[in-house]
Length: 473
Image (cartoon, rainbow, N blue to C red; front, side, top):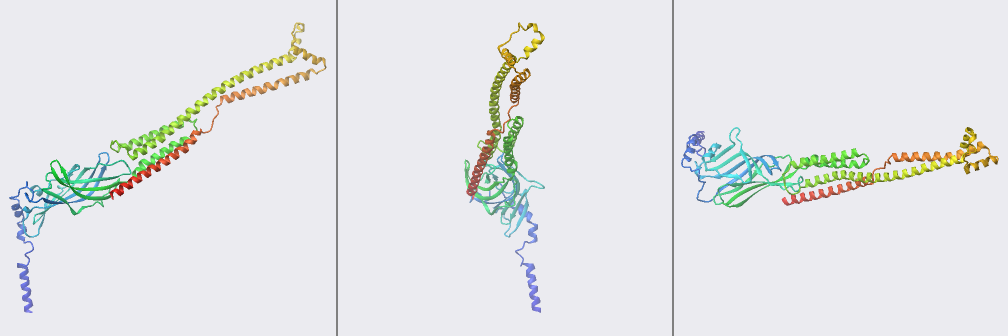
């Protein structure tokens, strides 16, 4: 029992006296400020670590906080990220034990830091709410982790030949501004990029990302460059409802004019002009969101073809109207001339018939005889009247003769009058025909052409997109 008690006392004495020498002593922690001050006394911020010796190796890793925007007009994209840089500066080693101090960003102004910059950067700013988003972690052996959070706008030269069914490859280029590969060598850490799977974009989907490093030869020397590339696929859903579907409906609406009678000029012209102006408005809206590039894009071909179909429907009616009314007016003019000649001939025939009635009928003579019998000897009796008088001498009834003669000459006069009235009525009312044959043919031809072109364009675009995806893979 006594032996066990003595062993316990010895163990406790060893533990509290010298057995815990690998833990930091309170005195050392209290004097850490003096240690850092002592380290910085002879420190030259102008010289890189291991100056005059081997190149300094600097590790890099990125944490993507968010993809903010992608602009086709400016050919750039904006993202917010955390950049961490790792290197070792033996001049800052202050203890043989393993310590790690987290210091504020102000400490970075007192030590040497890499002159890292983004080669394709347009505009960047460091976040400073509530303090500058910078930090330094210093290990006791001189290893340094230098981190910062900022937002940057980077250039991205986009290929818009297949817009909006395109895929883009945007890069982030990291490089040392002044130190060549003889002084500084940059490399990616093991987990170089994190947070890409959580980043979301409204019009794009991030398919993949890749990190590379290469040497960039410039006029001032050869520099180490780290590159991070994002493979982005554009989401076509927005364009289906904003561009493709409205254009399809406008083209179909222009085809409705083929079912409207070609004599309804105001209706067909108003419909044609409205569809043309609507297509112009849609085209202007699409082009306003794109840069002024010289080559032709897929959306340009689609919009131009839709505009051609709409404009062709309007021109088709102009051709129909000119052809129909031009031929109709010529026919109506010739018909009126013919009818006027026929009417003149009918009038001449009627006058002849009336004259014959007068010459054949004995009624005028009888009336004149009743009025003035003294003039009978001086009255001229035509041969026809003399023939009529011979009828009396042969025993014909005067009343029956008068009735038969009048009925015989009355029927042609009535029929001719009815025919004349009918011809005048037909000339005054234009003949309304059915829809012109060119309208019927235009319906079928436009529909077939539209379907063929649509399928060909879609197949070409899908094939090109598949080729690009396979190329990236």
